[in-house]
Image (cartoon, rainbow, N blue to C red):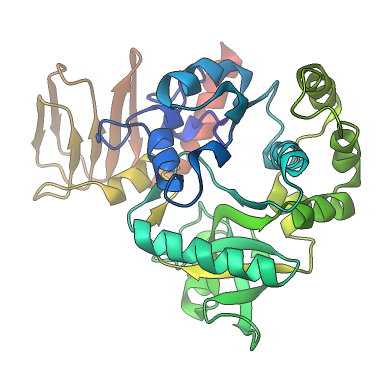
Length: 347
């Protein structure tokens, strides 16, 4: 999935060029390119489909060596449930027995081998039983920016790391997040899913019948010249809803694979700070002419040729990009998305 705008990474990430197309980590490749490369070791490259917005087709083509057929373009943003329904119907017409992995294009995964082993566990479970799998990440802190998954004890018929899901909780407050962390039976929801084509289509039909009926009308049109016009009509009528809220929180056949593979959704500047090398004062500095005095725990990212002098800052985000400067407390980073919305609404 590569259609988001990454507004919490503003001002570097913009509607014109969202964070999945950016070299956020300074590796020489974008987050999307890293995700694509990761999956080429899991399945044949021709089986990787990129679902994005019409606006970003050219950027996907420029960054990935894929056929036009592998780029699936949504005419408008309708959240993850329509995105997944579209992709699943399209894949099911190519192979009704397909195993499907759904992954965001902008996540960081440090332990590639552990990730592959986790995916293998998930696929084995979905082959054994009709179920929906989400990958859960062992929490390291009471983060209020993630959804949390509560799981049951081990099922004697499952592998050690596969558990039945009891509840989903979206972005709790700090006190509740701390309780989840202390309990030991809550994991973060990574937003990475594994299922068979038939299992997810059955679940969408059951829990989101109005969404399902729209996409089901396209059977026989997917992967044909008729698909594009049909999908434009569908998205004009389709509601905006996430797969978590629309399906995963309602279905009774949801399992979580308990995972540790060096994951971050890189959803905020703070999460990027956590994953980059730090100076002796615990600053992360991206830029050649940055001078820090009496400053610590800061995330600073500015153009290479920009001279920046910062004094007396503790736990701040300082970012300049696209002729815009952001200075924000790290603890308030979840407010960036709303601030950006307020700014452009007023304009």
